[in-house]
Amino acid sequence: MALKFVSAEEAAKLVKHGYNVGFSGFTHAGCPKVVPGEIAKIAQQEHEKGNPFQISVFTGASTGDKLDGELARAKAVKFRTPYQTTKDMRNAINNGEVQYCDLHLSTLAQDLRYGFYGNIDVAIIEACDVTEDGEIVPTCGVGISATVARMAKVVIVELNRWNPKEMRGMHDISEPLDAPRRREIPIYEVQDRIGKDHIKVDPAKIVVVESNVPNEGGAFAPVDEITTKIGENVVQFFVKEMEEGRMPKTFLPVQSGVGNIANAVLAAMGTNKAIPDFEVYTEVIQDAVIGLMKEGRVKFASGCSLTVSNECVEKIYKDLDFFKERIVLRPSEYSNNPEVVRRLGIIAINTAIEADIFGNINSTHIMGTKMMNGIGGSGDFTRASYVSIFVTPSTAKDGKISSFVPMVSHEDHSEHSVKIIISEYGVADLRGKSPKERAREIIEKCAHPDYRPMLLEYLEMGEKQGGQTPVDLKNAFAFHEAFNETGDMHNVKWRK
Image (tube, rainbow, N blue to C red; front, side, top):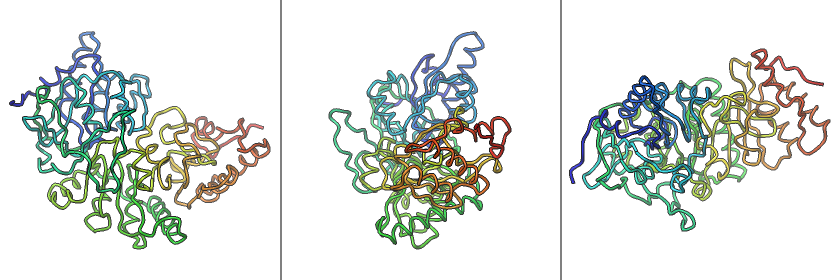
């Protein structure tokens, strides 16, 4: 049957107040870019009339400003999950305007299938190609696209001509069976493919909106002295692990989080020839991976999205034959699946907002209350990994915040899952250590020298309380209180 083509404005009218709407993409990569703005306009028009108009938004991960930003500014979102990074959406969440459910990214697709969030009314999917028999080829990000497209009553396909239809073949699309009939996921090597190169849906429920809009992929900040040193410390740790037989000399696949530190770590790995050519099994494939792939240092990369700068993605599009042999993009419940992570022996490298002296990690909240972005995929990889590493600069806000505190103000990853912490000052190896041993390891190896005496003083106060874990409850949040009261954690005042 012939596909139905409509304008973005007409497509947006298919989305009604109270709908659950599933979107494609994972980060800005692969997100729809024209229909969300038209939904935002409808919301604004309805609000001006005194009518309610809000939707619940389900995505693979964060999105671009053309989705989260537009909808947040129009106050068009009632509920949001599982992850976000847009300033206006973040503000709406922290102001209580949007109910936000922070969630492990690997679980959302199955939670939707289990009915935990109700039905999906409309799915909006960016594609580089769509056929009359209902084959939808995603662009740079997959996320939960296959699940929401199958579940939705209506599928709006944004056919974005900026992305070449020759991308077909880069994706590996599948959905697992649900419990209790689920079988093993037959991914035994990073490059294994188990699905199709497209999403298949009933063509009768598809409407197509044509567009030609670039990605929203800005360049990462250049590597600086601190991120360079963190990268070097990570590589030195790997080299030592291989030399001492705790890591195969052939190395293992790597997962790294999003951002400047992750790019710096990957760049350092590529530079150090003591690290063998390696594979990447991750959620987001970043610029550094693409550069190392061209150099032959990264042999293959499996991910959920090409979260790269526009300059980088244009290079990929000009050399698609090369990259289609070396990159596969999967749904998030495969790219982030703990079963596969443990089977392949993934090295997990993620970024912390803060860590406490016992190895607990805060990945999500500023001063315990303000949501930054969300847990993302860090939990999916951390607990199932061969070795879990968290990296962070030792301080923030020009040294006024210590990234290492007596007790984290919000806990996302417990001491039981965190094996290694690395800052620009060194490597804290927490494996096999008691809480008191971990505390001294972190303070001496990772904390900024300015804060070490205060952290040791807190540890000594805790040790006087006795017990397995030396916590002084009166002073556990003294660092945070000092910042809230004076704007500087150096001004800590202990309660005696």
